[in-house]
Each structure stands twice: as structure tokens, then as C-alpha cells.
Length: 378
Ligand SMILES: [Zn+2]
Ligand SMILES: [Zn+2]
Image (cartoon, rainbow, N blue to C red; front, top):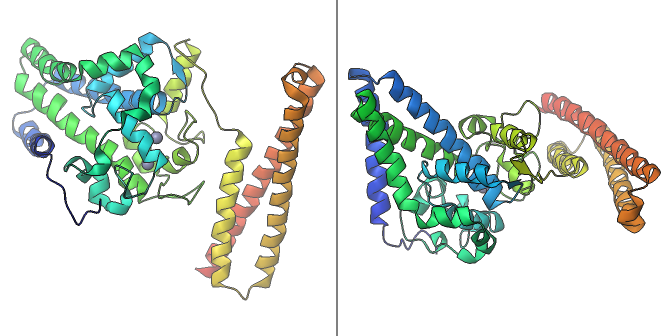
């Protein structure tokens, strides 16, 4: 449905967002300024903010929506409970919509929060009206029905929401003598702020940033959004390799979601962490570098030296990819048994390493070429 024929409002959502944003972003700061919050209130609000945000990243998103790793029940239970604090619907509903977003990214007729329907729609508008695209298709999440924790959270979702966002802060507020402060800071402000941070992934991370690995959809890598969303800002990587438990691949990229999943695996709480083969990541990155250089050279068609250099690099790239495909085919042909053999194992491992190294060096050369052509054409 196009946005011109607007469907009716979802009154409960409209009222909720108005109230929570007024209380959280206007009343709470004023209350803090004129009355102040107790230390306990700050501590509780910060703890809930961190744990609920991480639960959306590690649980709702990377564990249940994408199955990028497997987790033992104590971790799953903690992620389901703390995720409920975020008021972003049950895991079952969240994952169903999110999987559709990945399958039909940018498609205005299917993607629930397509950026092609506008920034506002992608950010929050998709929840404010009965859009056809916002309907939940539970056929997407049949696998999650086998997880008793997911179904338990879905069945008792509203009880848990009220208990955690109203009951718990009131109880703690009574204990420390700051009920209103608890409700304003730990519930209203924390909810409004963290929800907008998550919504930025659907709006900003599809608008602002770099397309490092693919330009087939609108997703972008953005370090600023990663800071606000426990690592989810590297959205172009995520859309390119959604089965990977990592979003920020490089060591310097802020991705606490990735670090904590790795830590959970180290403690025995998680296993089966999926990683995209290094070569595939490098191949995607190089392809984007070639595209960018090609586009820049097309603006300066007269420069034959650059063109020849680029052509030469591209031939080399194609050659490396062909060699990698040959090694892949050789490995499949050798069969799983051959990989038990020590020599065969070393043979394949070193071949992959060699090809990855070639790609890495070429990426560095292309980056240098990008800088040179950039300064020359600036
Ligand atoms: Zn995703
Ligand atoms: Zn997205």
C-alpha cells in the first residue's frame, strides 16, 4: 500500500508514543533539573538501559531473528526477560517482522519499515498506522515455536512488561524513597531514549553512512549509531552477511554484542557461532572499492593511466576469485574424510590464507588509489 492512501491510526500506539516521549524527553529532564534523581535511581536506570539494550542486540536480533549462534537456556531466559524491558514487542513478533525486513529490504510493498517510504515511516511511522506491511506473518518464525522460552515470553508478554516497567520501579522507588524519579528516569526516559536508538537502525542506518560491502540495498555502516545500539550500526555488513554473529567486523569497531556473544561462548553459555569466511568479506569489500573507483574515473574519462591501473587490478581480482573457487571445488571433491588427513588440512588452510592475503594487499592498494584519485579530483 502506498503512503498516499493512509490507513487508520493505531490509536494505542499513537497515544503510547506521545505519552512516553513527553514524559521521557520533556518531563523527566525538567524533573531532573528542578528536583533531581537519587543515586539509586540513576544506577537502576543505567543497569536496565544496558541490559535491555544488549538483550535486543544479542537476543532478539542476533540469536532469535538470525540464528547466528545457539545459546543455553539460562542465557536465553535472561535475554528474554531483559528484552521485555525495551517494550519492543515479544521476540516472536519482533523476529517475524525483522526477517521480512531482510527478505524484502527497501520494498515499499513488503518491508515493514522500508526507507523508500520515507525517513519518518522507517523510524516510527510504520507503527502508527495499520499498514498492510506492518502485519505480522508468523509463518516466518515457525522454528521459534520450538523454543519454550520464546513462547513463554510471547504468552506472558504484557504481564512482564507491566511488572518490569511499572511494578519493579515502583517497588524499588518505595525502597529508596524516589518513586516518581524511578518512573521518570528508569522507565519513561530510558524507554523513550533506547527506543529511538533502536529505531535509528531502521531510519538512520538506512540513510547515513558507508556502503562498505554492498550497494544492493540502502543499509549503511555507521559508527555513531553503533555507539548507541551496542554495535548494531554496522548495518551494511549485517545486511550483506546476516548469518554472522558479528556486525562490527574490525577490531576497532564498537560491537559489544559481538564481544559478549564470544564471552558467552567462552563460558559455555553459547555455541555454534557463525562467521562469514574472510575471503567472502574481502571479495565484497573489494567489489565496492572497484565500483567507487570506476564511478570516479568515469567522471574523468581522460585519465588513461588510472584506467590502465584499475583494469590491471581488476584482472588480478578476477584471477584471485577464480583461484579461490577452484580451491573450494577441490575441497568439496576431496570430501569431508580427506580433511581429517593432516597434509590435506594444511594444504587447504595455507591456500586459503594465501588467497586472503592477496585480497588484503589488493584492498590496501585500492584504498591508496581511492585516496590519490580523491585528492586529485577534489
Ligand atoms: Zn537483522
Ligand atoms: Zn535494515
